[in-house]
Image 1 (cartoon, rainbow, N blue to C red):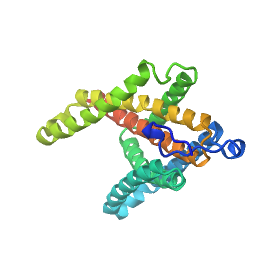
Image 2: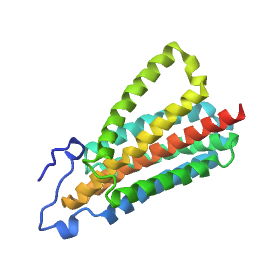
Image 3: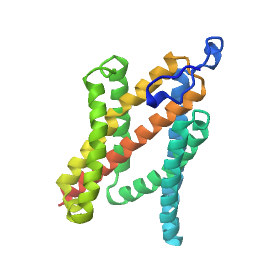
Image 4: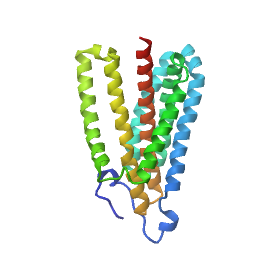
Length: 248
């Protein structure tokens, strides 16, 4: 087994040359598995959004409990799936289902106040992902260049910004009512999410070119799904803030 020194890929197994043609990871396999995980999220999200009025009418407290539990289970699924290629298949499906519940609820509530906002967020997410994929494919966003360094810098900056925002929020809750400030913060976190796609594309390239096993496809697909859904959430939150600011 060959191990890459990059900690992001340290848990991914590389297949032998003898089985590479049959059992090695491929871009097609990663694409199919990513589409499958996103499909689970969309399906659960649609069901959740459809049943939401009934759930709120009969047991609103139960919905909040389900959202909290699904968030915790989803986070655990990410950790398990990213640390173990063999477990990433099951962890990915569990994570996608949990996110479907959460995002279905969030989108349905947002649609109740701002009609069409969900469709706009989905369309924007697809455009951003497609653009980043094309830029990476033609070599503009490859590791070792300015954008790669910017990705690391924004990762560190996002963590610091999140910590400081949380601390200030405890002592100055009024900052959350400052819409221009919150729009700026959400825009930064959105850009961070977009830039982190570079890591996902690098991982996919490494997995395929190194002849990793088919299990690694699930690992990469889970990482891509997490990034795509994160971008969708940030776009949705940013649009909500923009619409609220325009109404004031």
